[in-house]
Length: 504
Image (cartoon, rainbow, N blue to C red; front, side, top):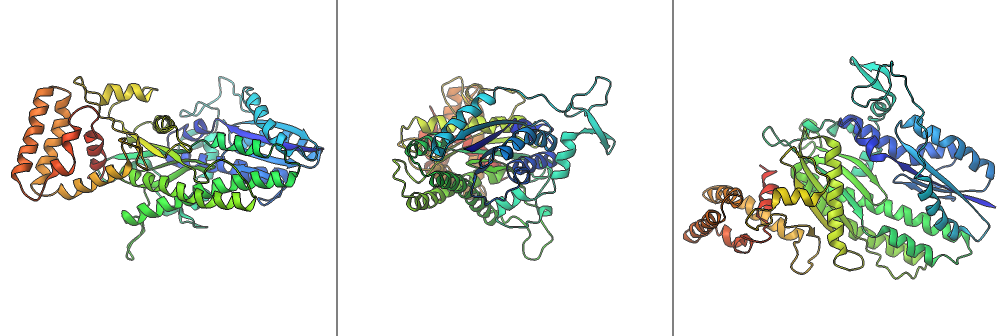
């Protein structure tokens, strides 16, 4: 008899974004990364290349124990170790026994068992009396004072872990990156005073559950347990590896394009970018606003290319005849917020935008669903859970113009918006920013404002922009930006000006 152990970490986002301070957020991210790797390896007394280790990333663990006693030790003690290392985190566990030749069925059953366990809330290990001092920012029982501030075990653990560089290694592909080059305060990430915008990017692979289900069904009758373990293990490793390679390519792209970091022997410069989650097919990262659109565009493209190579090799090596494309796709959301905006709301919005992009991609009824991204610039203090309601309130004019032109797709999808088209328009705006053309750009911004007030007046303003452009030679912004087709219905103008404004 063998024992398949499964564990899933819950409450990750709340744990990471609890305090809103980037240093503690970074530390929390490092702790979450450590739970499924170093902490589990130590308790299970294994190494990362153990043949029985099927998955250990993105908050999930799957491991086959050969001895019942070893499995029982983990089940009894590992959750407490996790809650001590990361107060506020919960761990769901399940174990499935199986006979030789039953690994495939066990892997399918473990997912069902874990779903059941997620509904059972464990008792917290830290319960304080009302008379005890508490951390003002977390509400938990305080254990020490740091700079005259009472902090709890959770904040203390995050501060201690903030010096680790595991996530920076995943971002830069360097084994020992210099963490002093990476900004640790959100308000220091901004481009300059007057342009205090940052972006939270969240990306998630498309149809991963369906792919895993097809893989499970394909191997359901496989009696060779070693083959089953190897296929699922290498599948998990391939996803993780492709995600990290795509992140690294996106980072290198913006590093070169925006000349980040130390240059020409100058003093060290900080990179205005910090990864929060890089694991499985998930990515959450915060960065300076002007970098985000380029970074996400490159990430989507690199993810498709890396998975096509990685999974083609996986299918070939294991002779898998699956009716799925080896090229996987991904959707992303970008929340542009001020540097003082509550961080957990920014993360929530980035995830909501990612779901919005996924919803539009699924409507294409293609397999896999095409890669796409959605973004939104938060310019008020209203907090709403539904992104559709937010867009209706802020991007739909009383006269029928809708300024939410996206989601933007990586590849052409009929008449829908594509990322390359936006990039082309931004290039044009960068060229016309100087000289007389900048006056037309200013009028275009005024036109957006006027569309909310008076449709006839706005129409006159756009006619005037066209007239002035016709009288000038060599500029042609009206024609090159195709403004004629963006004066009504769904217009790209507002989102285009917003992205352009982050560079100013």
